Image 1 (cartoon, rainbow, N blue to C red):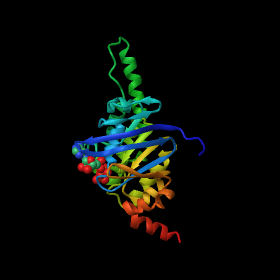
Image 2 (cartoon, rainbow, N blue to C red; image 1 turned 90 degrees about the vertical axis):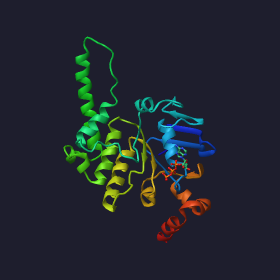
Image 3 (cartoon, protein in one colour; image 1 turned 30 degrees about the horizontal axis):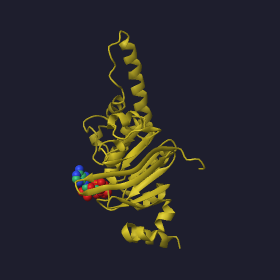
Image 4 (cartoon, rainbow, N blue to C red; image 1 turned 135 degrees about the vertical axis):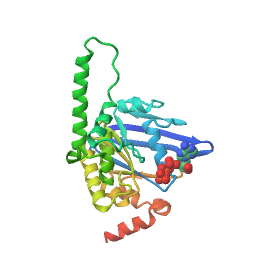
Length: 263
Ligand SMILES: Nc1ncnc2c1ncn2[C@@H]1O[C@H](COP(=O)(O)OP(=O)(O)OP(=O)(O)O)[C@@H](O)[C@H]1O
């Protein structure tokens, strides 16, 4: 791909908790049609970085631009309306509702309450149609067509993670922040999630926080490694894999094995 369309840029982003710099002077760019994976050991600052980009946490310093808007300091709701969607490690699913109802509720969350208007019923009817269409598109994109009426709590672990992604997609984001979408999955479930993320890649700019190294090397176009709140490498996966300080700090064994397998 020659021209990169940058949808999200963070510059010199820092978050301090007291004396601890959980995220320290970090730059991130997310491009349409690219998956940017962020890896690092526990406590490296990956979740904090995600929370800063989504507006769930205010930054201590630095700036964030989303599709040309300076969104630094914006609320998560306002950022979501500007088409940034995120999934959470901790599930947001209502277990006693069907898959369809969960996705429909997420789609509904995009509709803003309208001021009094004598033709309000007309507007509401068209909003209802738009909500249902958004929910349907999200269900299909996430590959859950056959599970619309399944009670969410009765869906498999893999399907629940697909459902979380469908709920995120129902808000029609162009930037997607995904926090460990493969966590706790078996081999077959992980493979179908990888396929889903590859399908979504074309129309989204994605940041993927993930521990599954195999999936990362399959999916990522760009790879950032964080340690103790700082970025120690950020480049193509091949370049990062060859970086001695990355191998020393984090990837060591896994990377050596991957490289070894190729010879
Ligand atoms: N609300 C908070 N208050 C104080 N310290 C926090 C808070 N949130 C995170 N931290 C600290 O910031 C550092 C980075 O945490 P963070 O959860 O971002 O790391 P992570 O890379 O996502 O780790 P993991 O892979 O375990 O999820 C850690 O030292 C953590 O204890």
